[in-house]
View (cartoon, rainbow, N blue to C red):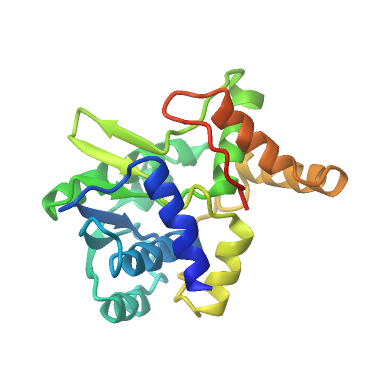
Length: 243
């Protein structure tokens, strides 16, 4: 199963030229299945990828008392990856001080800024994020349905204000595979106690896609292919199979 994960990952890395020799890459590790799978993928790919690179795992501790990242530290030790934990007050700012009715936007903004700063301090100019195949499709539909525009994040994004490049090596990896991989490998998933978790527009789109897939199998693949063929800025057509 690891070989299949590495195949998905290398395909994305090669297609969008995500890694260069000498890169020091920070992986944002939230403790969820996506970020832990990404960490395992990039750590594993190091062994044979023709362009040597380093991996550093960074966790932003949001301020929830019942999140234990000690098992993630143990995983990083096993993988031979440096693990950095950054205490933050993001939970307190978003929920206790600002009392945001729609907290996800502010939370994401604060997390991005903190992660980029931590990556730079760790000597990393590339940050790997755990967005996967299904995230691409969902984000596209979220923009179309709720913002009235055709848009999606890019596979590779250079942030000129901070001098950091974001890469998304799991963009060809479907969520069902990530879920199965995390379970098979017994990855130390840390439960997210955020009160907004599961009550978002993204969850609505997930549910919609699930319903559409029952009636029209392969709808996710066709939407993903449309994104590449359009193409959106930063995307490129791909003639290989999506799954």
